[in-house]
Image 1 (tube, helix red, strand yellow):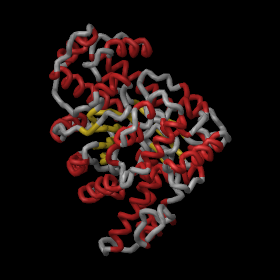
Image 2: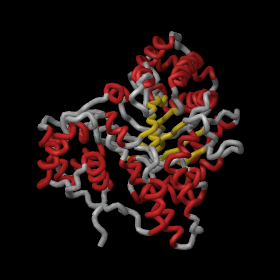
Image 3: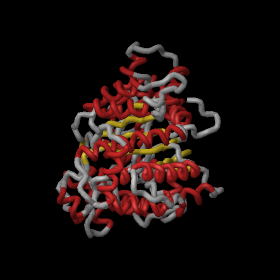
Image 4: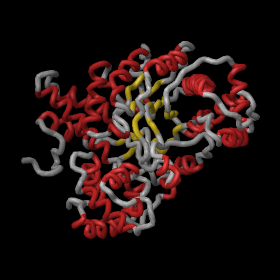
Amino acid sequence: MKAFMDENFLLNSETAKQLFHQYAADLPIVDYHCHLSPQEIYENRSYKNMTELWLAGDHYKWRAMRANGIDEHYITGEADDYEKFEKWAETVEKLIGNPLYHWTHMELRQYFGVYHILKKDTAKEIWETCNEKLQTQEFTARGFITRSNVEIICTTDDPLDDLNAHELLKKEKDFSTKVLPTFRPDKVLSIQEEAWSSYIDALGQVTGQTIRTFSELVLALEKRVHFFNEVGCRLSDHSLEPVVYEDATLEELDQIVRKALNRETVSEKEFRQFTSCLLVSLGQLYSEHDWVMQLHIGALRNVNSRLFQSIGANVGGDSMRDDPVALPLARLLDAMDQSGQLPKTILYGLNPRDNEMLAAMAGNFQEGGTIAKMQFGTAWWFNDHREGMISQMKALSNIGLLSRFIGMLTDSRSFLSYSRHEYFRRILCQLIGEWVENGEYPNDIEGLGKIVQDISYYNAVAYLKLNENANL
């Protein structure tokens, strides 16, 4: 019997162990998609206790606690911080088979040197040990980033953001991690939302641009894309809920914009037309700036309306969609490609049903001269567990080029989530090691080691052109 989470955790062959320890373990991290606050990084936020650091805002943990019958009072309610931590500890005991169990203990070990198993009986001791360390300078936002060997962080930022924290971080001489913005214009695309008109008014004020037509809206967004680019942005990000495509004339688009600005109801057809055409226009802007476009596909948000109304969004009331994806996605990508302005694109799927389809879709739009222009993105959200990661990588390897994959990201609001990169690298090395041990791939350890290092780090650096020598 193997010891619990020893140095060879998830590594079940000699090849896997060699690949991880010699090639993957010590590489820097490129976290090219996350939801960390750049302001908290700039201010080097400190935390008064583990609940503030570990539980606040973590809807993964909140969902598990609700499933364990924990009252909302101890999750997002008014219970004191230790009571919330203790209820989380009680839940951890029930998480057998859930990646949260592994992540919890990886984070306790990596950052706090705590090797005890978290449960109700050990909660008080672990609480006190960790809280004591949180009072020291190493246990701050920047401290966690530095100790995790994070080289580059790409945050998620609204087009209206002034990016002041990013500008200030660029001037910091004692903090070597690059913190770059990512352009996420979801609110611009949400034309059926009541707040859309007010948001567009704010966009007009920020850009000094009158926005009464579709073309004027695109011009305002072009100004913000240029501004983001000047601050170092390398990616955009879109959550497509659902994926749609429908053509429209400029006259029709102008009419749709006027209706929405006047707070009139926008029909489903008009929503499809506006969303499709605006995404195509944005794709052209991204292509001009050599950005990477991220498309997150398949989230069904705020399913529990009572939870949403009482607590808000992003609190654990979301799920997977099962809308048809292939046809509208194909038409959307093709519309960008027809003018030769389809940017480098990462396709993320929340429903594992779509894995092979997305891997195949990426292959339709690969282009000579750009290695792996289209990426089938890493296992996301409900899929970032061992089976989900393996399923995603097997779909990619079966249909595309796993060796050109840009690897893992945290997609997290927590400064402790970098252990997920180690988790991914162990799974990657185990998968490749298994193929070698089974005689499915030659035992060329140096060649295999390069593949592992590329997927873990170098491919992302090159794909995003994050250094002068990038050539992917």
